[in-house]
Length: 451
Image (cartoon, rainbow, N blue to C red; front, top):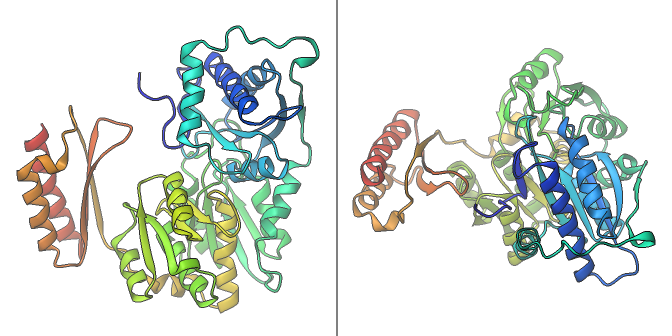
């Protein structure tokens, strides 16, 4: 069995390993144990929140039981965006915050993300410590009794606290009055808080996919499926559309013409604004290897330095902290504004984009013209092994020839998936024909070299 924790916590089909009630109980016990070892306080507390999946009820109870069985108290937040749980963990000075969510995955999946008391995701070393405790059976004889057993209670005003936090990231002198916004809440964790936040800031809000039933989270909606949002923006004549994912840590925008914009677009618009306002610390933004070539081209024109992290918002944040950057993110819509939060937050990212719109009095389609989205072709190939790319001369030569064929107007990226037996071949180029041809040729070479 591989490592239980992936790049964003534990994830799998609910009620199947590792996301069974039994395993989640053990994760709760191990997390509570680690918190007690790392924080020497009289009484320990852990916050639990979730998205809207039907399996959340089952797993929330299992997690609570595990934590309480180790003598740690639980504070239940109910459905709340992942970044909201990070915020409340930090503001309550709790020992940890646990999120039951599988993010943008379909409803049958679920997962656990863990935040430390500082509001940042748990480092790999502490995740490994939790996993080792579970697999070794070292906690079996640790059984607090009587008054030492943990208690659980609900925090009734969690949503209100998070709403105030988000609104405080929006400039005091700016209002959303006179603006029409369509929100796609993905039938997920933002379904209640997002419409309230944007309405209270003055916008006319049209909310879609905001009626979760436990089974419809991310179903043909949200940040990965914007067809309904694009249609509703054009139908209502809205100024902007915003699509969140199931747990609310991503956002994708749609301009007033119904055109979808990626996280790269949003980051480019905000990077220019931050630089103009003197907010772009160290004149640097952090992107990932998957960010579009057009984003890098736009940053070069603006004389903004770009750091390139591995795929995953935790790696973006890690590089942001190392480099002293205040802005970073992914094309998928994970956007981190380090001057406002410790993690990616779809609502806060949307508010920063809206602040630029209102402050410049410029339509989103015009602002998005800051970058040209280069055509991209991605081919996923199943592989039996993962030999180092640099050890295959024929493939190295093919990559070099493809890059030369792009004449500086695109890029080639070939990498193995971190979670699947798969090699990803990606090409971005000046036009679809060139891009598709080069990607196909490289894919053939990969098949020949790896099989």
